[in-house]
Image (tube, rainbow, N blue to C red):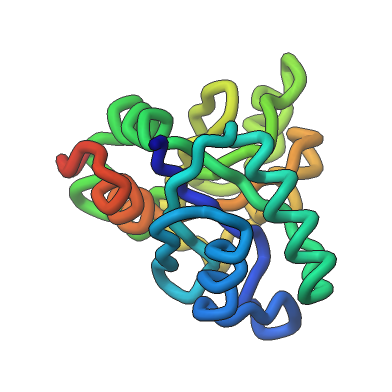
Length: 184
């Protein structure tokens, strides 16, 4: 049965989106998702299901809203796709030397043609982005907290919502889902 990672957008922030990981795990199990496990407090879960990733996104989003009044986007990726994210990393040096400032933005869908270029033109700092159809790699060499390349700017320029994870978290999720364990 396929293994998946579910990445929850904007949960457990200081101002909103409170979601205990034990409650999330229970919800996933109630939905029939097998071997549900949560990782960190920032909204990451692993589970097995015969359903497709897109069907799982819709199911989890609908049930979060219906059961606990939490309206948030959920991005689901399969093990093979996470392994592709690891293998396709264009920032090999940063992955080794500064993995906490290398981020993958997992997108709900592919942005329109030209949207990634528009985002690149909007960058005013030292950040660099490289993208594929459903995710972006972003380096924040001067730090993430003070960067003007925010999630809001990324989503506005791309016209697509997403959720970001630093390279350490991406590697951990990939490892736990059964993918590659290299530092790429």
